[in-house]
Image (tube, rainbow, N blue to C red):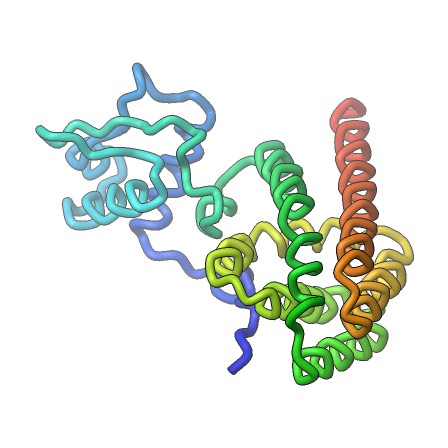
Length: 247
């Protein structure tokens, strides 16, 4: 069974503990905490006027994202930011745009390290059935170039098909876990004029190398595709910086 990409916009109703956790995360990111101490269960209950159960669930959420540690004696401390779970869609939703931009650049670096090699691996072991699905996805991309949201889902599945064809479960989980950041990245690169037409052409080159069972060709085609994405991300960042300076 093929996995479908979940939409991060599918559900916007948040439970009370999630809402409080979001508020506290933004406060921590802004530096509005003293000596690395986060609010305790009692502090949260009193400040937000919520029950101790809600406060406890809030701390569990923050702990699950590696934002805080609840130490012995109920002392709550903020964990180093480098250790937060940046693959969580919740955390990404709560972070300011400049940090998300940094994470997207780091995601791109990760993709450059992994995806060309995954394409080369896939070229050696890909099945006719997978090639048929990839061919269908290329056709769908061509038909969806005027619909960025629908295109995004097919784009994601194309890359996951290649990852699965490489037949490495650890790499598959790494790629799948980064899907939320991948979605955010694709939304940016898809905004550029003619971006989807160019992306379809890139994907077709990757596909042809896989059909030929050509590892070097698949590696090179994937690198070219990611290089094009890097250019689009850099252009978006420059536009954002210029807009910020004009304010």
